[in-house]
Image (cartoon, rainbow, N blue to C red; front, side, top):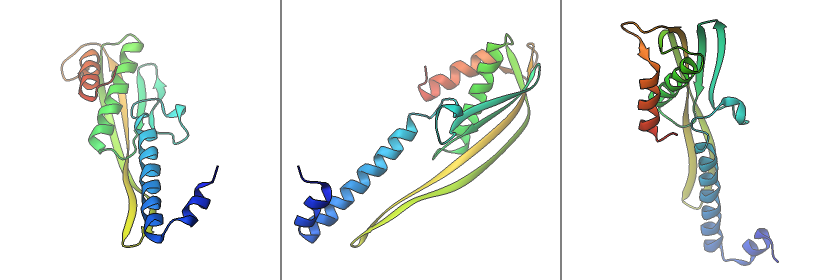
Length: 159
């Protein structure tokens, strides 16, 4: 069986460019497909540290962070709120308040592959949203954890 390099040498220049373009597109599609499977999961489950993480700061206070890849900051905020609601319910509370919110976005660039007059380029905005939350009993002006969880899971098709 011949290797890709052996086959590529036998092809005319135009076919090599088309083949290289197809390989580049499939490679980039594979990267994005692999990352999209981690859209809402613990950051500790992947090498890129994408997803959510939390730190307990007091018995009823947590810092929740969501690191996203190639998603809008609004979606990262929703995922931080979703994780906050899950934590709230997991420890027996029904409501929470956001006492502090911070966020930043970084841009990352993929590779540029020139193929004749065509170039394949990948670019992404990577938001990081951090919420400080306090778990509270039901009262006005608080987030209802069960409602937030149900609403955001439905919005993003999560189980």
